Length: 90
Image (cartoon, rainbow, N blue to C red; front, side, top):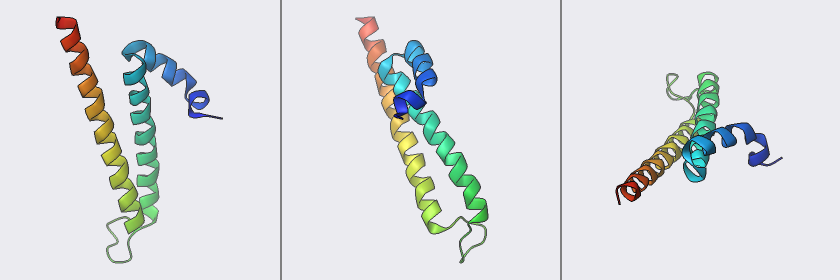
């Protein structure tokens, strides 16, 4: 099963509301957020041996990478919105 099958309903809804590119990016953000929540929950049980108040280093890295990916996707969505608005003004 592909992501297009697995996320069919969400993709259809977001693509209809935002267009294909922004809709797919929005669904990607939702998927990354879900992964971030699951990794964060896992981090509660898998703490660092050095500091019990922090997640293990591998989980900390994964959390950072997911947050970074979300930030990049958000910036692309914002750029697409600005470009669309500029075209509408012309």
